[in-house]
Length: 156
Image 1 (cartoon, rainbow, N blue to C red):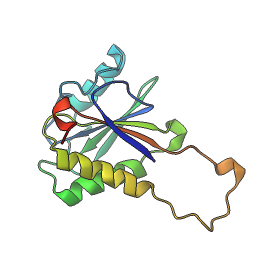
Image 2 (cartoon, helix red, strand yellow):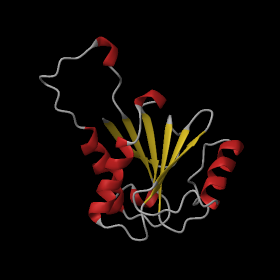
Image 3 (cartoon, rainbow, N blue to C red):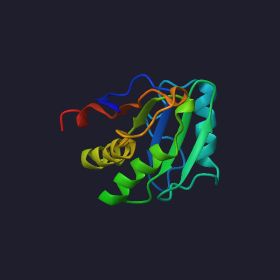
């Protein structure tokens, strides 16, 4: 997995928004780069009863150019819950929808919580396949992870 950290910018094939319980609208900068229709779909999903933000809950919003995954983190996740949240999010994704993942950390996230979430995704991607026989049809690209946060978290 190729991982990098950047400020809010372009989004990949899959946009992951880890949100805390009680989020009824998208935080600032969370939907930058999405079209008006895509923003509307995500905001409708957040304001409905379909997504509660409870720990471990996922909601996939399919749009034309980008799949948006809303990840519930609960009210105040522990270190283990942050790491598990990242791992479970990657496990729920399929490379058929693309391999470029953008994770946007917004309101309420600390630098340590962000790093634990990303660590969970990286650890979940690990495969020990040294002795595994591979078919040519099964070869898919590696994941590319872009963790985006505001500038104040970049130097930490």
